[in-house]
Amino acid sequence: MKTAAKWLVGVLYFFWMALLVFAGGLALVRNFGYVLKLWKWPFLFSPAFYLYALASMNAVWLPIWACGLFPQHLAAMKLSLPRGLCMAALAMLGLVGVNYVCQALAWGSFPLTRDPNGDFYIRMIPFLPWPNYPFYF
Image 1 (cartoon, rainbow, N blue to C red):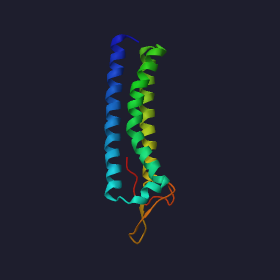
Image 2: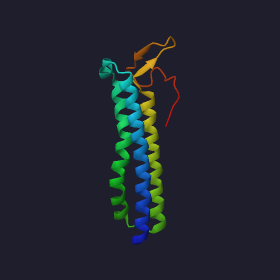
Image 3: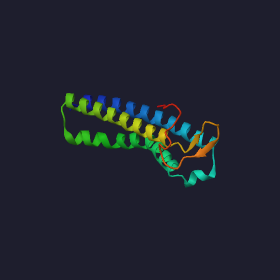
Image 4: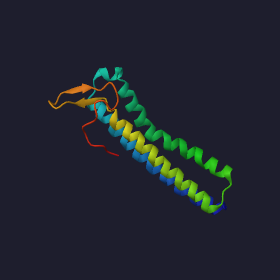
């Protein structure tokens, strides 16, 4: 690709990754805010809590990791401008999909659930019982 085209792809890719990192960071703060607000020590013994924490942190970490990795691969492939833009667009869509999966895992493994009587209990196995609150992204 030409230098100006590489610069354009790099700038667009950087702003897209910054948006994903910002959205993932907001989700991370919101997710852990819920946990801290409803903190109970048995969280530490729940495998669902660890999946929840890992999925929430990966929503921030994966775009940062890909932002450093993808430009190196794009430069090594030495693609033409249309193919380079196509690869960048596919990478961006793939990262949105990965972020969506991370948020879905966090949604299904939130460690504290409420029964119909309004009592809270600790979820030990992710997605069991099925969450009765709306999915957010």
